[in-house]
Image 1 (cartoon, protein in one colour):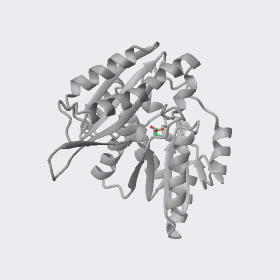
Image 2 (spheres, protein in one colour):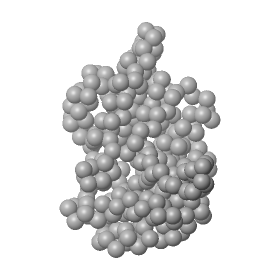
Image 3 (cartoon, protein in one colour):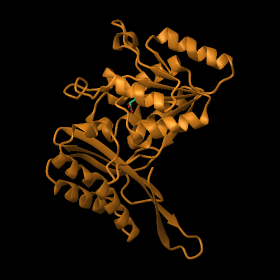
Image 4 (tube, protein in one colour):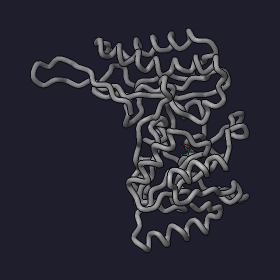
Amino acid sequence: MQVIQSVGQMQQFSENMRTQGKKIAFVPTMGFLHEGHLSLIDYGRKNADVLIISVFVNPTQFGEGEDFQEYPRDLVRDCEIARKARVDVVFVPEVLEMYPKDFQTYVTVESLSQPLCGAFRPGHFRGVTTVVAKLFNIVKPHIAIFGKKDFQQWVIIRKMVKDLNLDIEVIGLPTVREHDGLAMSSRNSYLTKEERDSALSLYQSLNMAKDMVASGERNVSQIVCKIKDFILSKPYTKIEYVKICSPDTLEDMETLEDKALLAMAVKIGKTRLIDNTLLEVAKEKANATDHVKIQNP
Ligand code: PAF
């Protein structure tokens, strides 16, 4: 396994692989790798000839007062995990090489970046799309793999790739959870034991929503109210948003239609966590009765 720091060397490596007709898979990360990342890495290993990951805590996607400085970092551990997972290259650029002093070009996916997390983290998705566009130009992958825990990020990147005619296949893989349902996240390492107990309310509330839908509830505000009450009944919780919206446009829904995204961001103490699930209401043709199929994205 190689660790490459320079943009030029990374581009040269990928160019050589492409010239040899090799298919390149890419998993962009901010490091502090966990099982969630490993599922993306595993997919890349199985579906390409060369597997590249990046480890870069991207400053432009953190707002003022957010956790850029505190974000957990452990490159030695990440490289060890990557080596065991048979990654070919770990790309670890310096901030100043990605963003030199005179940097002034940003990529923005307009409407999709506004709702949900975008409403609470101004500029966040501009930072994400800018760094991902840069990483795509540096790593030159054929496929790029993202986790659907960051559902909005995945939708936005898919749109960027489509709108800018980038010749890259964007894959979204399901959220990986701890044994008790907590969605894997590098930020889980911030949680105290008591906060972690409260953090379970996110996953539990997704299941609550599924049960409500299964028993015929179609009114979005009823579901959202019940979820908010449940989460707020746990200590240390502060809700940023709980929304049910179109999984394609991310626009709010009033009544549950055939497919909906339930997404939430909740602060547990100082730690901001997100989670989501897809709710699907399928109509049976024969007797036109509703039955509900729930999918974990
Ligand atoms: O999902 C993440 O870890 C980051 O947003 C990404 C895609 C690596 C860009 O910095």
